[in-house]
Every structure is written in structure tokens, then in C-alpha cells.
Length: 108
Image 1 (cartoon, helix red, strand yellow):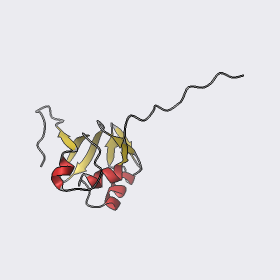
Image 2: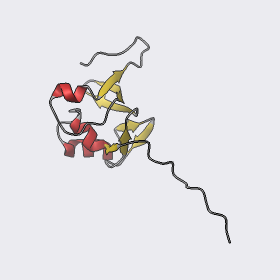
Image 3: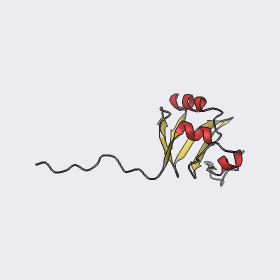
Image 4: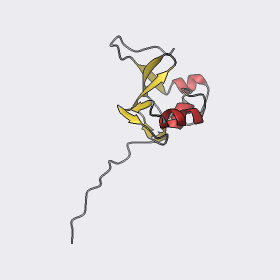
């Protein structure tokens, strides 16, 4: 009899959410359809890896690189939102990460 094989995937590390739904809930995308297109076209990086599917799972602590407004922004997911609520509720779920070494960016 063959020895049992070890699992090939790591166990889930807490709750997750689809990247398109997250971007819409966080009010970083104006619609979920826009967020799906953004992901499908490869404009988003999740923990350094290019994302090409809107169903990619995002968890607390993950880093996202997004083209926002006139700049490329890095955000850290602080909490998984449960709904598309008001802006202050959405902003409490993420923070901008300063990539220039000057400290945290304020939300612009």
C-alpha cells in the first residue's frame, strides 16, 4: 500500500474575498464590472504576482498594487469588508503603503 501523500496546497489562512468584489467594496473601483475588467487585463498585482482573473482570493495582510488616478499605489488589506458601505467604513479596511521610504501615505 502506498504511503499517504502530503497535501499540495497550504490551508486557507482565514477568510478571503474575490479581488473584484474587494475593490468594489473598498470603493477603489466604481463598479464590480470595472474591477473584473481591471483584473482580467492584468493591471493588478497581489503580493507581487500579476493577477489575470477576477476570482483571485484576497486575505487580510495581502498587498495590492493598483493603478489609481495618476499614480501606481500599493495598499495593504487590513480587514475584509462585509459590504459596500460608506467611504469611512471602506477606508478603515485598507491603508496606503509608502514605497518611497518616507512613511505612510495619507489617503488622498
